[in-house]
Image (cartoon, rainbow, N blue to C red; front, side):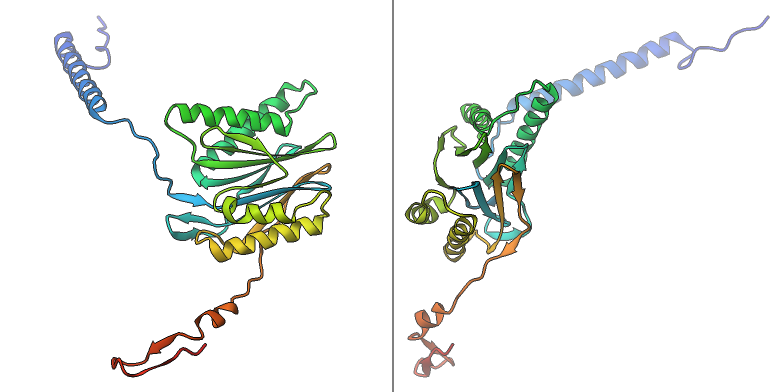
Length: 278
């Protein structure tokens, strides 16, 4: 008479039961140890951003809104990443620029891009305006602030829709405001006064570009985290456009005047010093 083979595993049910009991006991003990470890570990938050970008500048001009930012992402005080885009298009009506922690900026852009995709999929004939996008972003920033886990960024939102320009800012505390000129980071202290002084209604494209280039040049001179390689973004009735990176001309000839009167030591003898020659 044919006898079927034993089921896969242990032929003796008692041995199989002992093995299953030991395995279950081991897994339970392992999970308890892991749970105890988690209970004793502190909850951590980002308190000191590492890879950061500096100022973003924005102004309104006769055709729409213009944003500019350099391509540097600094690793602490090291100029580490030299080809980073921090002025990006979003949908049909919006342009976004971000300063602060770069990983947080990447996370924010993913949120906003998904928001635009979901809005497009709805296909209800109504697309999000730049103001609506900034309002959503402000709610996100404020919610993260209330969790004591903020997104360490200042985000500039520029837009053009139905013949109207929009320029606003949201920061890590959930603060939001609009303006004809906006600057983030160190630019809020150095570039914003220059923008307010020279901005006027109905600036042409060339006038607006010259003003922003001049401000970024000043920031490059004064801000240790700035770079003279920048990208320029515009949002008009034709949609958002971002230029390829380009270099700003700089002039360091004033350094010769500043240091011309300095005396330098040429040897170990304190008596042997002579004027510095440049």
